[in-house]
Length: 224
Image (cartoon, rainbow, N blue to C red; front, side, top):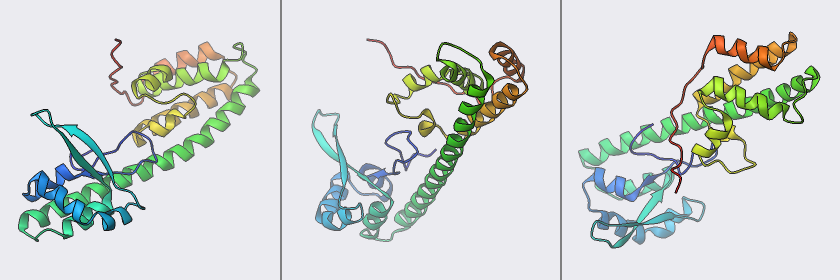
């Protein structure tokens, strides 16, 4: 979405963050100076993160390890107030606020789509059961792979692998709002086609006529 605010994963319930390095690069201070300020006010910064401040260790070009702080919206906003209000700092603070807002709006939309998707999944489960289609106990998983293939251009198995989605977790927790909407639309089509008495092959052919709703490009993990 942007180059100032990030997500630690593609889950719908993660918290957006920026880094001390991003802040340093945009306010005209060294990374060491920003880290020193964070360390000086660490107690307050932790309080604005529900008692926590996250960091990761990164290796410099010289091969040394250094700490990079990962700061949520409240933490980064407080940190920036500690710097002089130069034109550069004010402009960056405005950009950062806008990008945090945009990321939060996207997450809200994704959560809404996730909740809506759960209702569609329940309804689809019931419709598949009522259809009397038998696939040796794999009715829903077979339809689910078909739905993802026609919604996003890739089946659910490849999508789970590409996004490193843990077994047992819903794929819909890792979809963008556009992707979730595409899946919902195809689930709705499948349910309608089941209601009019079509079997699996007939539904598959009908979906092929419509084409893919929202095609995604996936980078699959490289096999060692």
